[in-house]
Image 1 (cartoon, rainbow, N blue to C red):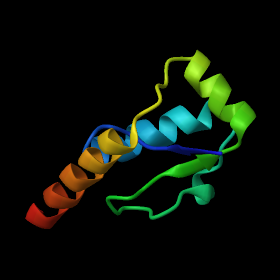
Image 2 (cartoon, rainbow, N blue to C red; image 1 turned 90 degrees about the vertical axis):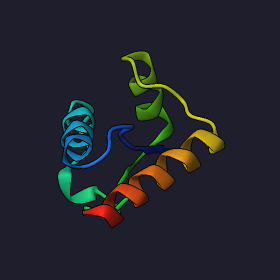
Image 3 (cartoon, rainbow, N blue to C red; image 1 turned 180 degrees about the vertical axis):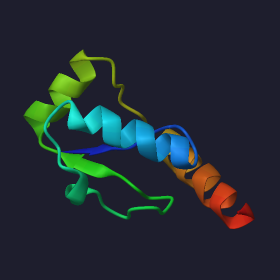
Image 4 (tube, helix red, strand yellow; image 1 turned 135 degrees about the vertical axis):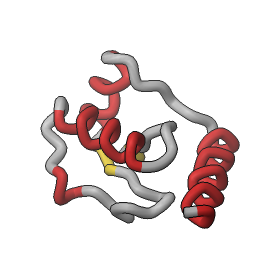
Length: 78
């Protein structure tokens, strides 16, 4: 299982995320934490590997933590 999220902050990141996962058959209604800093999709292992082959990259736990903290801070400023 993969958590798929955008590294962009704000609405641009939400759009990028939805556009990217749609290419792999993930439905918009499957989004988790929509509109929040933890917004993401879950992808099965085979789909995740397809995503990686098309340009997605794995992130370390530290990278994800820093990204989520930045997204949370940006949302607090809005």
